[in-house]
Image (cartoon, rainbow, N blue to C red; front, side):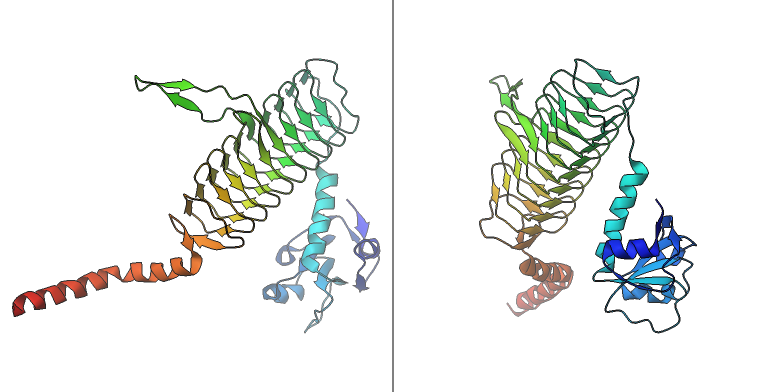
Length: 343
């Protein structure tokens, strides 16, 4: 990717200060800049690096005023961080895009693969699969019978998608993730053994979802496990059968959601949060790391912490008391001793 400062400024609708003809070919942190690199300054903690950076161009907010001489060309934009993220997306798309179908890929039937879609080595595509435009399907991906993959989807190496699952447009699924494995369903028998309950459903992933590496999303026993539009999921997340996750909910690593639970929109889950099965979480609720949620939460936009969870302000107060327990125990023992001596 090569672009002049002038063209970049026009793309970002920015205001250029300095040499508009300098050519950019890479990106770099402002403190690690080099000639031909683009950097940005959003957090003023890094302002000193602006005056020493070797980067050719730095994005800054329009509200920012330098306090010393700047050697780099500046491009003033409304939001430097957002503008830099936009450029990262463009740069990544160009740098990583692959094309063609690898000779070692196995495609079981005459499936129409768009010319704009890449299929990597040793990928297996079963019967009746549909794949959209501009997809990047990396090596050793498995797509089972009847899988539907939308446009602009990236499946990184080793992703496994079981039969009849659906992946919407603009989704990214990272390496090693399994979509549509059997739910954890077993019926106890009189002899205390367990009989497997057949899992007949699928998983539906809507548009603009990103799922981290080594996640597991189980198919429904009947019907569908559903990941709604815009959900972002970290690595090592477990989603059980018949779960529904609402739009634009964010789930951090090592969290787990048990079967048939319904999560609302715009929720936020910290790392290692555990959610019990067959409950409902209302829209906008946020949970601190390692929280345990054992019952439904009907109110919206709450903040929760602990196991079992309580309202975050109460949790913080409880934490203060907990830390004082050794001193409180000591005082209680002293009082107990005084009472006994007076008897």
